[in-house]
Amino acid sequence: MKVGLIGCGAIGHFLLEKINQEKIFPNVEIVSVLDEREKSQPKLAKLADTYDLSFFSDADRFLSLEMDVVVECANVEAVRHYAPIVLTKKDLLIISVGALVDRAFYTELESIAKEHNRKMILPSGAIGGLDLIQAAKVSGGLQEVTLITRKPAKALLSETVEKETIIFKGKASEAISKFPKNINVAIILSLAGIGVNETNVQIVADPQIDKNIHTIKARGDFGEFELQIANHAMPGNPKTSYLTALSILSLLKSMGEQTIIG
Ligand SMILES: NC(=O)C1=CN([C@@H]2O[C@H](COP(=O)(O)OP(=O)(O)OC[C@H]3O[C@@H](n4cnc5c(N)ncnc54)[C@H](O)[C@@H]3O)[C@@H](O)[C@H]2O)C=CC1
Ligand SMILES: O=C([O-])CC(=O)C(=O)O
Image 1 (spheres, helix red, strand yellow):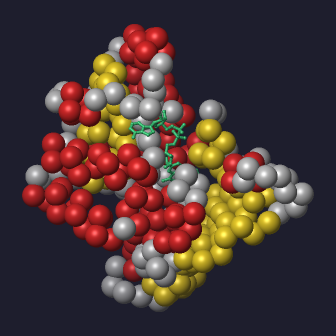
Image 2: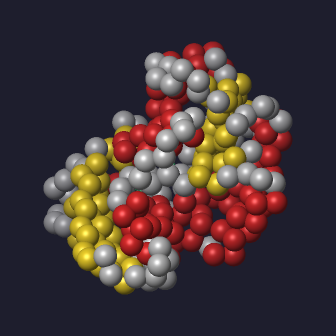
């Protein structure tokens, strides 16, 4: 399976290391990277050489390559900009799912994917339990979903705080507009569950912790559910949890398999 990346920061580098260098999947290879913000040409040339791939800052040339799936690991603006065009040509895995908070945009992407017989693939990212949330809502019986995200204060705030501080309390739709690089998890949880206008979100900046801790609580006809994930950060980006990159790897692996789990 040939993979293209949009964005080559902390997640992109990790995927290159695991897939192209360690070759953890025999039939998967990253063949190309688009990173329009990376202006350092020598750095690009070195990466292209190290990982044996093509590097582009031009989307048309990137998309003209043969690729089975494009993995977005850039940011929500990149999704808004590239997703409609990518989905006319390739399957697209989106990690900056915050861009899908806009219902009209999400519907537009779904209809482009349908028209061009492409798939839009949305990993669980830095959280888990989405299998349960989806099952719980399948016939309408999911009543309440809450996400409490606790991150190191320096990952969320430019100013210092002395003690834990609730910096946001509201719905997922508002949370992502205020913290687009920190709370994509609220949007994937909403898409799996009861939607961005119904999912409750609380964000806590905590100067005492060094992990990204997400607690999900749900209630419905199935019963009650609570799950807490204490994530290590990605080397290279304290805002991003390591599990996010693992969830992309895991989905890429499952795309080549016959059995579906979960
Ligand atoms: N769904 C989830 O659970 C999570 C999602 N995320 C998302 O993943 C994204 C990537 O995370 P990291 O790798 O840690 O970020 P990063 O900041 O280390 O890397 C992002 C890369 O994207 C590139 N980029 C920015 N705009 C671009 C554009 N328009 N076109 C092409 N490349 C562009 C930058 O140059 C940079 O190299 C985050 O911005 C966030 O939106 C992060 C954590 C959890
Ligand atoms: O990585 C995390 O723990 C969560 C995150 O940044 C996001 O959802 O955007």
